[in-house]
Image (cartoon, rainbow, N blue to C red; front, top):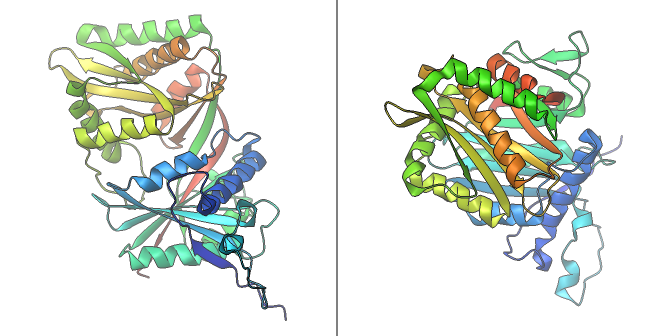
Length: 383
């Protein structure tokens, strides 16, 4: 009988300089993610850079972040190194990682988990060891619910080889390693998000027609505002209010997630964090003319050092203002703004709940095409 290796699960040290030898865990985490992303999607657009991880772990005012990395078992008789630095692992030693986010201002019962194993090292118990360690961290932090994510390409067709989300929308392959690990540990597939990509440049005339049709439906009751890389301070409270509503108005299936309140300071910190990470952004919002309230918004971010891609972030139309094509208005306005500041962008990435038909319809009309799915798994630690 073969005994499974005792993988070493290590809490990542936290240096503030990517060049510090102690940044090995961050570099390894990023290398694992890059390899996994390329294996799944064929590109590394979605992978964090070391500076992204350092930035996130250096600013934890609203979310506590924990990074665990998996290393090979230690040798029984490892020689003692005279140089202490020689004992420090390097990025290539990292075989997998588990990244935990523990909200601090709301949903303090929750732990959000992202886990990956370096391609070529799957099936050796690394993922299970990381999951065990991550759940221990969550329990020690007083968290009763874990929500974990996993990516799959493509989305499988309906049938015995597919597992459907409890929402009834979206599927993942039953035989995928992530699916088998999650189901064996008691996780339920609560939601599936469609991952879509828009290839640029868009058909300018088609986008203009969509915008004109939406404008005719909305009439003169709304006007569209756009901001690039800066937002007037007076608009931050309204954007924070829309961000708060994202936590209650966006579809979330049976995920155990409640309202997440935002204020102007927190939204300003989000913008500042993007700048520190070298991200630019464009925001388009719909203002209700009579009340001067912002009632819809959408956000695009993009790495300033790489003009090839951008991310479609949050989009929301307040429930009481839906049915007026405001989602189309803000999205077309923001794509136009992106084209003005980033004409070399080749693709835009976005994610939407599979049950969010209206938003998916807008994206399809704009030219987004599905490339895969992200599964959201949930488990109660109290059971």
